[in-house]
Amino acid sequence: MLRRLGGLFGAVLLLTGVAGCAKRAPEAEAGKGSTTGTTVYVARRVRTLDTDRPVVDALAVREGKVLATGPKDEVLAAAGPGARVVDLGDATVVPGLTDAHGHLAGLGSGLVTVNLEGASSKAEALERVAAAPETAYQGEWLIGRGWDQNDWPEKAFPSRVDLDAKHPKTPVALSRVDGHALWVNSEALRRARIGRDTKDPAGGRILRGPDGEPTGVLVDNAMDLVFAVLPPPTDAQHEAQLAAALARCAQVGLTGVHDAGMDLRTFRLLQRWDRDGKLPLRVYAMADGQTAEREAYLKEGPFQGRLLTLRAVKLSLDGALGSRGAALHQDYSDEPGHKGLLLLSPEEYEVRVKSFMARGFQVCTHAIGDRANTLVLDALTRAAEATGTKDGRHRVEHAQVLRLEDIDRLGRGGFIASVQPTHATSDMPWAEARVGPERIRGAYAWQRLKASGAVLALGSDFPVERPDVLGGLYAARTRQDAGGKPQAGWYPDQRLSGQEALEGFTVGAAYAAFAEGQRGRLKPGMDADFVALSVDPVDAPTAELPGATVRLTVVAGTEVFRAPAR
Image (cartoon, rainbow, N blue to C red; front, side):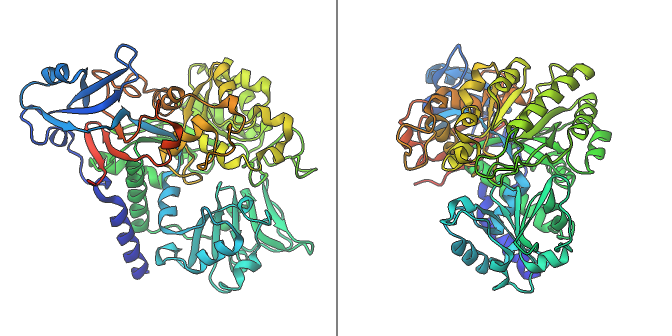
């Protein structure tokens, strides 16, 4: 284990760099080399999203806030003599980019365990597992994530037998890319006491062969049978993984993350880092409302620190479309007789919604399938009326497949659609096969959601997708893969403009966190959160976005990431 921890720390040191959890000193950092504690940033273009001054070429920062924006000479005059000046050359500066739906603990684990993302065949996935790094172990268990059978030629789920050949005695647990299915070997099944006679838990499926034996794939709540015996990361592993995740976010240009379902252990660690000035990014935490830890969150209520906020709860009503766990009104088009899974009964879901609303929490619910979305809208509407929290900005996380009438209800009800552009471009090769040509009209339907009046908050759902926000901006504008296919975009009428996409990662995300008065735009008095990019995400040809780079990430006036000089 010591050898494994040593490897883990080495990996984190390589990943963290300038964006690690070093103590923050915003005033000293922003004013480094100046006598006024003020820094002026000059760029080819500064997109403020301020309607009074939408595009300028300079901004001044003092004490973590935007002091002034405008022409360079005007901003220099406002900054006063002795201000530090940073020339960003041909970069475009935009307000701080926020991922409105990610999972920091999952991202950190994925950075140091077996990464199966992008494996084009089962054989390639097995090769990666066989070459697992030392950091991929939790206790005796070999851990990994990211496989997707839809990317393999056979399109079929894998089995325990595939893993047993190389790992007959070591328990192996590999999460699917969406986090809603688990591929395990026979030793893992043995330790979890899963056999022929084990019944499917409510909201879960144990996939079985013709002989009735478990195949080694567990869907949704059935995964909990393994998680119950899987040892958690050590404290050292946990801290190193979180540091790596935060560093990665800063590297890709994120100044903030909405963490969708934070466990209590991670929340306590981030509370300590925030108190000690070691948290590099803003984190808007959604309490994990799915497990027994919800009782502790309910008892303590919302929390506001310096960069850490907790005033929301995350609930999950159904599974994912890729593993056919999303709850549909009618059968899956490619699996007759199956309508998906509900992870909570409608009655239990509504009880939890009301209890958290009454305690002052914003309710954020994972809903992929059209049935799950209907149930969420029904329950949120009733609970908001019952608790008097109609202005609670309650959120539908993913809002992925909806009936057209429910899209209208979502907007009319004042609910927020928290959607992930790269889900559409990842799912487009097979999504219509799951739901058919009629239901697909209400799937990944961003323009229809906007037309309903819903605010869009954009994210990635990392580590399900990569946290690279430039990729999210590209997917939102094109609905194409990185190679530019399909040529016109997948259901191109639902594409977002460059302005709409940028707003989704800035003002939309800020509104979804009750922070539109502090963040999302670059205006005097607002938080000095911004990012310098090598391209203009609004006007640049979309083909330039996938290869673009982040040059600087600034949070509350502190430079938390700067790209190496070329």
